Length: 360
Ligand code: NAD
Image (cartoon, rainbow, N blue to C red; front, side, top):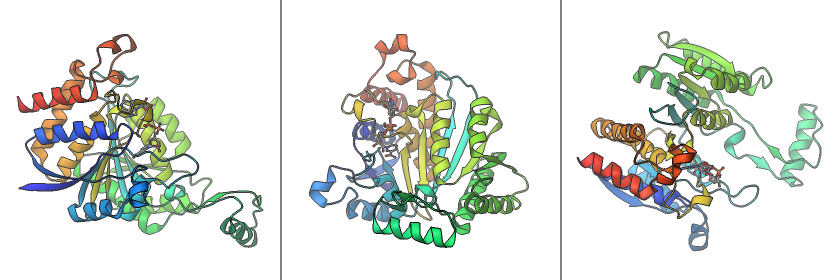
């Protein structure tokens, strides 16, 4: 049986990583037919949008996609293609496993944390009003009238919203993941002491869903305390379930705990569609240099193979990556101590070594 998979190379270092990842996924022997689709700033001239309909149509058709990172302009410019994809396809759950691998330079050992992030709501969902806009003026007027706070007229606004439906869906996803993957504990991350309504609702829903999974330990941690706890004793944590913005920040911190962004994979799940991508961005300074680490995207490929039910191929690729990291010979610069970076391999040479290992 062959699988049709949408492949979005992305921009910056994305195309180099995507090519390396495609080669190792093919080398697992799973029959993958690649439907390559382009998204990002370069598409604007040709199609008028960084996220052409053809990309969404392809993912809706194939139900499985893997992508490289895509640059988002800071401040102005177009809205994030990554956020746009998650919204358009209702990919409500983001899964980011962060685990220490033997041989990686890290201050910590034995970290094995999975961040489950709500993907569709919260301050991160892109509902904003620009400063001086009619929308901002009207919102400021209504807030004064209904809630009493006098927001400066010159402000830009971003709206945080949390619904019980989306909260229940993500917390259930986290508990189901824990149950299916032999995990022992789920921790809900929030700031309900200050955001009593929005985060309060998330926490209330989390507590009520947790009661349905008595075999899995549950606790809740305020987000600022969570950051300190993760830095001091990450081994206490297992699955973390977070609203959108905290999930974004917590998952980069967890990636840092296990040796950096070069190894941290991600998956976005909807009802019947899944999109796999590394956590890291397009690292523009390394574009075209054959330098960036392709392993985060390859580990995202491992998650994709598991999603397809190709467990044996997923295990083989996971093992090939882990062994390569542990040996420390065929790796990119970021996995080597400063004084040894002269012997680092490039992106495509790392792929060559992995292909050889998989075919041996
Ligand atoms: P980034 O992750 O691109 O890079 C931060 C630093 O991490 C890099 O300078 C580099 O030192 C290191 N790094 C990242 N990936 C690496 C890899 N594979 N191998 C080795 N080192 C790596 O973060 P940024 O600079 O904040 O963002 C750059 C652009 O990427 C922005 O436009 C941002 O919006 C976008 N972005 C996209 C996604 C996505 O497509 N899902 C995610 C995050 C950021």
